[in-house]
Image (cartoon, rainbow over all chains, first blue to last red; front, side, top):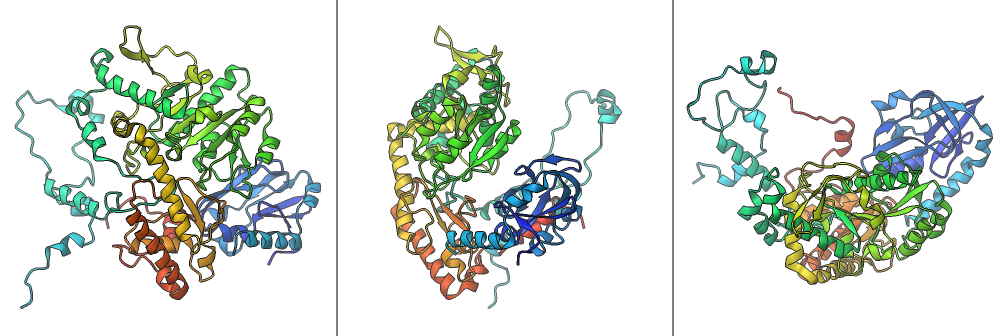
Length: 132
Length: 495
């Protein structure tokens, strides 16, 4: 379910690093809790964020949720296709529906995030709490 | 013999077309009398660029067509006057007829807002009496009645906090908001130029006071807290939270959306609140008008008084009332004239009709919510089990096993003749069912509601499809909410 080469945040974002370029998205657990996504707001190119800052919002029929950057980042590309096809976030959250790419300005931060196995355990615990 | 005419009722229940579709050239809603003054050439008087012969596509309909159109639409509506409206967080209480009677008194209904203050002493006295009443209920020091909605009240409150802190040299950077907050709280903080930081709730559904202590620093301007919170739980550590904030020079903002659980029993001014708004359409029984006139008065502690929106109503030495517009520290004007006067009249009518008996309304609201909590606790999952205040939040965890979620249950409730409760809020309860009966409901009505909810729980287990495809009895079935949000059609266009 959760790609092994990604890292995961407690706020349910994923990040993967190729060279210096970080790609960020939200997890399958996040899209499932949000329900049908209807709108995505993404940052401007060139914007700089430190880890934990809000880089955008995802709106579903239920709620608007903030997207937090799991790592410090200078934005180089945003997934403009999502403006017309926000449903991709529900269909392929770990692939085609990536949100933001950027230069990771402090790649060491990835080490603080969860790997796939730890994240799976984390969401299993969340689901148990929810009484499902 | 077969009837030759369709029953009259059939006509009323037909799909109502838009006025644009009923339009036909030449129909008129009114006849103007013949002109009895010299005719003026509009293009000449106003300039040719400002004159036009008509409005393209404007519907042409007769008076009776307009009357029937809106009367028919009104029969599609669901209102508190038709049945219970347990929409959590919204406080859909009965709007007593005495409010309407008073607001329609000729001397009030026909007053003009531009009439000078010397000739409007009665209206000003109404405003002042309401101000004093709200100050007594909240335990605060000064107030503005100007904001025309809760959200505008919130904005006024945070703008005052910003102005106050700026006057002391530093407006600061952050506003803290619990994760159970109404969405308007973070939106207000951002609009007022603050960064938002979320405060966690603890296992009892209250603010995690330890987390709050970690987060309060010299950059924090205020904590925005709703009390009771959106889980219907009283924040019993509120005084401690106020102390934590005050010790670091920060302020406590209370969202008074749930003031109907406190009115007459506890006063925010007594537990350390510096600024708060209240929604007259929630706590004080004025109508919730489809986005129409509301009122969100904001009460403040005395050090924030200089920052109140202008003008401020003042009592002069001779006992007359007037407006103080010389307010150099004010955050400015928020609204034309002095807010929505007619709504303020209704709130005062309610206050005076109840008087000290308002405490009974508060207690009954809490009693009714707890009655529903006890009656449904074995049927629906209760994520926070302690007694609640004016509303109770269940989750759909049990029904989810049958593939039925909170939205399905809410839609099915329509078939039982009730307005749905609030779904999917607060966000910290996955699949929330947020139920607020208000004090208006009798025990018999509450029992009918409980019976409906129990029946739906049984259906969810035995025949989930019935619930998932609800409503079945409504004029329109399940709407495509996702389609409407993703590809909205925002205006009618001719075919």
